[in-house]
Length: 126
Image (tube, one colour):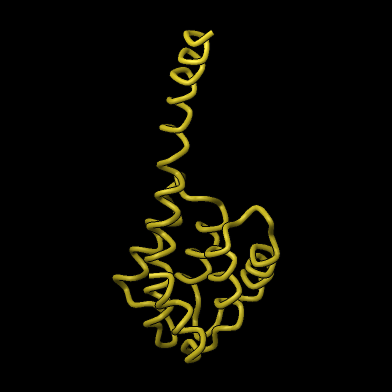
């Protein structure tokens, strides 16, 4: 009986090794997104746009994180209407993490610069 249990545990270990990096990548991406949003002044800098493109192109990140990165990268004072619809859906999604939903919610309302309340929330995510 113990041998069977040990075999099952050892067989499941690779599954954790496969899924953990994706979660770690989202966590790192959330920190970068929060940092860019917290320091935003009308639109991201050229360097920040490169970072955001990297996040958007990294298939290890969730679709929600990639969508937020694109919306943030392409914003001019506020996000485009098509991007806003996607962000609203992410903010309401049960599939996205609380941090990702929070980023989407903040970005939907962001106009030129984040509010003091939004900055405090973003700093907590960094």
